[in-house]
Image (cartoon, rainbow, N blue to C red; front, side):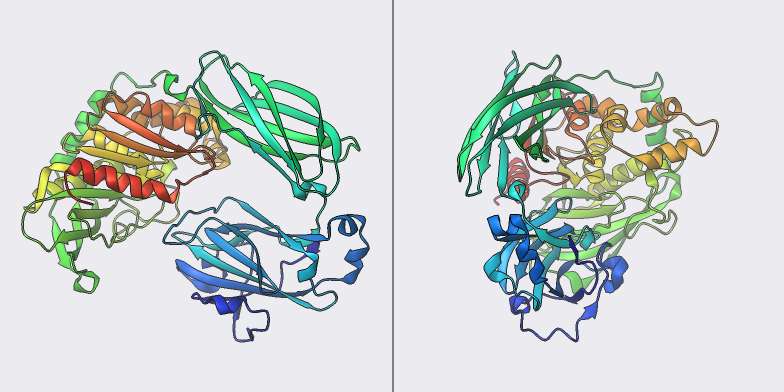
Length: 557
């Protein structure tokens, strides 16, 4: 592979003329790829920016047998946060994710794009231009590899694994048949073997099978494999096509769900679980909230006034957020928006006829006076004991935010909803469980669910390092502490309707952990699974969630 790591330049903003290979980019700032642009000199920036690179493609690559067969190079740009569109010498060669107003991030997807021979300038300068959009948090071309090489037959194969009823979920009680469409986009027929491997979501191999296959040139072959899981759950299915020549095969993997609504892992509640939370809420009630509102007129919109709010929460800790108050007279539903891990909530700029509190729990956003945000190690702060563990205060902060909303005369206290993504999704579950004043709950990709399964189905070496740092720590002690904050153990307290969104391929908040909490809900509930999404939901989900909330609120969208 020809290394393309060095020589990149970058510019904030967005102008598609910047894809022109003849553009003079001498004034653009040099930037190091392989790290978020916040660490590479752009500062704390969300939005559009462009990367450009000039490099020479050696004519010797034309002598490669694969190039003579396929006339294509493969461009590798690593992972980009969140969305990209890429040009090679002025022609679009690929795009991953989707830009606003139909935003869908793809920060965990490695970019590999085909570059046809007619675009390549041999032994001359070639220009790669990458338009990048970052929605929030870290952004840019943050992880390699970066290079270009001759494409081989595998780069012309696509294996599309069957998605069951369409969302990657299979519900047949007597097992299921997994199918795949293997597409050969090369100009030659191929003989080989299709191999199947099925693992549980903790990596144990449960099935291996194979069958001979003949693939026509530019043709598609449908293959299948039967599998009967012993228990409901999530299973990793891998389909591989291997040529008779024995070289490395083309492969695709997907996590699929089998009867996930029947999953019922045992609760891990400790005997004093209820007493602990009763005492925590009583201690919160003893803290004078001292609500403060400061007008931020520069952030006003036609429909809402903006205020920064401050209040005192559990332990007398100062927390705050951003309150968007409807300009119209009357009483309105309210939406409480909660932050992702280390995130900073900002005003939503809503035009809907509702009040919105974008609230930052302790250590996040504008709630760092008493609890610092750095380092971002919230989930191990105070983990040795349930008393003083970070999430004891964080969950109480969410209840205090509801106290604020109820104190406002323009808020209808019978119509208060809560939402958030990732940590914000877990906080939404916790808030609805601890506070009956919440009438709707709409979590996305929630963290903080079924911690025991979480540590088995995902990789968090920093937790192992934390345990190893002190002799009194163990996995048993960690799981005992977090059991008090596991939303699986809290879910049966939720009485309001719930609308849940999750990504089936999510390695950060695995679907198995989310359903462990969802299936314990006794309240009216529904969910949407996005089969190709990792730690995100499709853009359509936000519109559907908004319609669900406004419909339940009884206001026009």
